Image 1 (cartoon, rainbow, N blue to C red):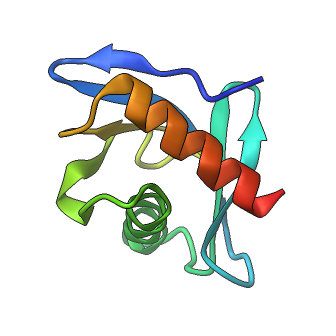
Image 2: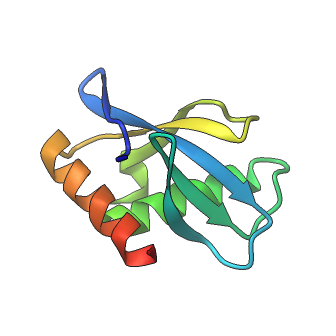
Length: 102
């Protein structure tokens, strides 16, 4: 299965399964159509959310300002939005990031 992209305004959104408290920050695969992202920061005061945005931006090779959490800020399952990139290029970069961790 791959990460499911959905239109979100002029951007593209996808689900993220957050795994705070990990040893390192990294994209660590796909699960049920969502991108799995592990971060070392605790899920308190937005620390894990900031780390998730940083990790996803780095994995996709985009600026941090292009990535935003648009739903699920207090939940393990979140929806992230990426702007300034076409869907096919985003899908390719997501596949590359997932493959790099496999």
